[in-house]
Image 1 (cartoon, rainbow, N blue to C red):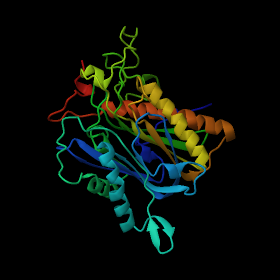
Image 2: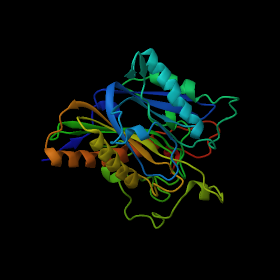
Image 3: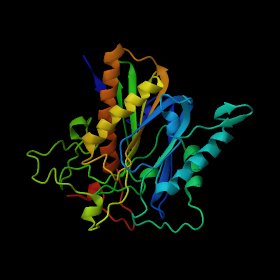
Image 4: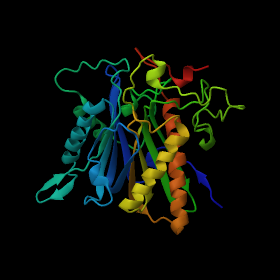
Length: 340
């Protein structure tokens, strides 16, 4: 019998070998989240959005040389936020981490960004954006417990009609002997709730009351599938970039190609939790990481279950990010907890 449940923290750090750090600025309404691997971890990426912003993602393709990463960075700030990876690298160099090339060590830190420039924050940062220092501090803050909602890369995230945020969740697969964890910065063009209700699209996958316990509405509201898009509902004629960026992780020992397949499967979690997703103006991306602490049981069946858990865990993490968002001064959208 297949039995799934969440880990003790219900965070990506239930996957052994990972820690997470945030650094954000309330005036800026933006920030950085870093995922630190205790040891170099096998990784891959899958990008399905039409407007991605990335750094060091080509090396993650299965046919390319570098097999492992030291950390991953998720950042606000649009393209300016790619500087966060430089700060993360600086912190890792101080820790003696990195890919050895002669007498040098080069930390491998792929990164992805989301668009949060028009969210009510003060982006007049002067000559240089602050993301390099935020990235450094995020690595230094890495721990096994971390906050959800309006923190790190989710500090200024928005959906079409509510504030977004950082979400995380985990699943333990007893029969496969593995744990799956998801971490996501939720900032899509579309919505995570059904119509104008408080019910999340991810409701069928909820464990306990981790994002309100409301289930699905019965019957579905008439406006359930109406497209509520961030730029349209704001009265704008031109869409702008948004993006949901995420990490799916497991302690199961996977190859780089299997990590790629896990990242693909995790995108199904986007489709279960966001309507619509993978649009031309989203940069939707999933990094996949294997810390390799345990052997996956069950052969091909075990890997199928792992991929299914990747999708359901990602859905739950997305809903949890929106559910945990907190109100702040100069917000341009309300938080889920204020919706009646």
